[in-house]
Amino acid sequence: MDRDSQKTTSRQFKTLVVLALAILANGAGNLSLSYGMKSVGPPEAWTLPGLWDVVGSALSSAPVIAGGLLLLVFFALFLSLLSWADLIYVLPMISSCFVVSALLGHLVLGERISLVRWAGIALVTIGVLLVGRTGPSSDASRAPAP
Amino acid sequence: MTTVLLVGLIVVCFSFGDIALTRGMKQAGEVSSLRLAVLDEVGGRAIRSPYVLLGGALQVVAFVTYLLALSQRDLSYVFPLTATSDIVTTVAARYMLHERVTPMRWAGVVIVSLGIALISAS
Image (cartoon, rainbow over all chains, first blue to last red; front, side):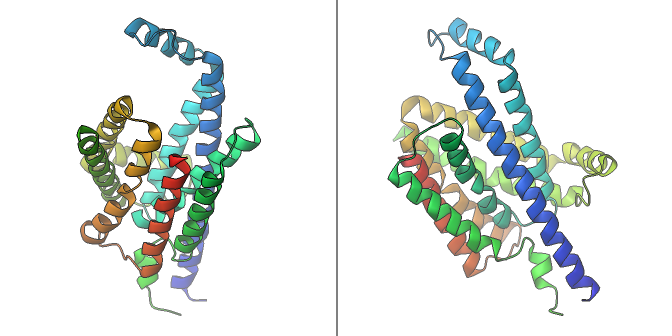
């Protein structure tokens, strides 16, 4: 294996690891936010003081804060990916978040998934597998074959 | 009609926000490892990059517009329409970032967008 293809392989591995971390952080973050906000409850009135109360109790809820921090971690990992991978590779791959969030909501929070939604989950999965086969970076795919 | 205009604004801001973020991060340099020193160095350049700041600002505008659109129409109407932003982004990335859009990537992007639309429309 020459140096170029070695670099491509390790970059592909790095991309998949960071993608997996980003998707996990996003899924766990949304789960935590959803769980936390359910116990905070909806605003008593859709007025400024009513909304302010919700913001106040959300910010003192540990699951909401943890969820917010996890989404910040997600954004940092997303930006890291963009520092070497193509945007049109990262965007569809990151869409696995929808699948992970839907499945986590179903498995952990007991939310129901309709038939149409299962079909959507299947389509996203197929699309992600297609894009995943193309490799993360235009530069790497332009490199001469070994 | 106003909702359609709002969705158009959301799509444009999301797409060009992502394009700007990508250009900024490519300039900030590759995150070569997850060591703190590397993250600090690249992160420092990223938050000073005009492209990253522009991209972040566009994402905020997109999000606020999204909330406005949600105040008028249901999530299951608004969100599937915003899934079209990936298609706009693909065309923009082809011409503005010179990324390679192979048929396989096009197929993947379109199928994923359809899937997202289905997930959120139900």
